[in-house]
Image 1 (cartoon, rainbow, N blue to C red):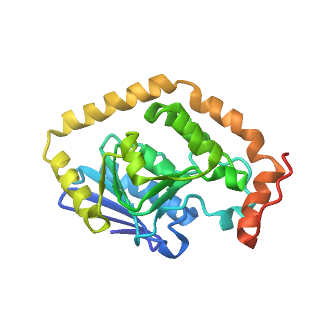
Image 2 (tube, rainbow, N blue to C red):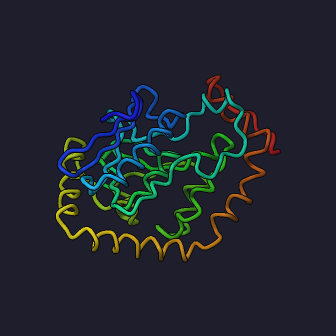
Image 3 (tube, rainbow, N blue to C red):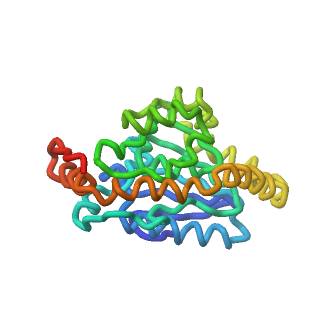
Length: 252
């Protein structure tokens, strides 16, 4: 089953798989991919035969480099809608199989997954500061990892390795690239063999704790980042990326 040529969705033996299929663009999240994720998530949630979802990217370079900056520069996007990138909200378990770099919105998808398996060469980063864009989606990151590590990611815009991500509890396992999908599928099979009500309740309890702790933080995060999105720098960053030059920051 295929959502579109850039976002593939299939179900086999109770395991659903979403594959971001833009390897030539480092699996950037353009409109077709974002819509495909939403549509696939809806199918998965309502399919009684699908018990666990694996999300991954095509190729071995990138899980996803995040939002498509070329598309952004053409649209002159200011403040993205709150659901600009799907939050993978579903009562069923979601496993991210990270086959390469996971930056920006790609990192957001990883954060939203319930379990994460990473290839040895995978990296994780919040690159928005390089391009003058915002990261309100990272509001709950200090609940997943130490606040100082979250600040390092946000302020330096430099990625961390898979091994460090494992060390700080961001991922569950790190494996050789060739074993990535097999490991993710083995974990999915283990989950699918368990009582579905128990699995759903376990996920709901943990998610409820996170959301309860976060409270109004996500709303406040949107307010904090709004001036950044509306700044001249927010348009300069994607434009410089498209033109393959160093951005000229104005600070407003």
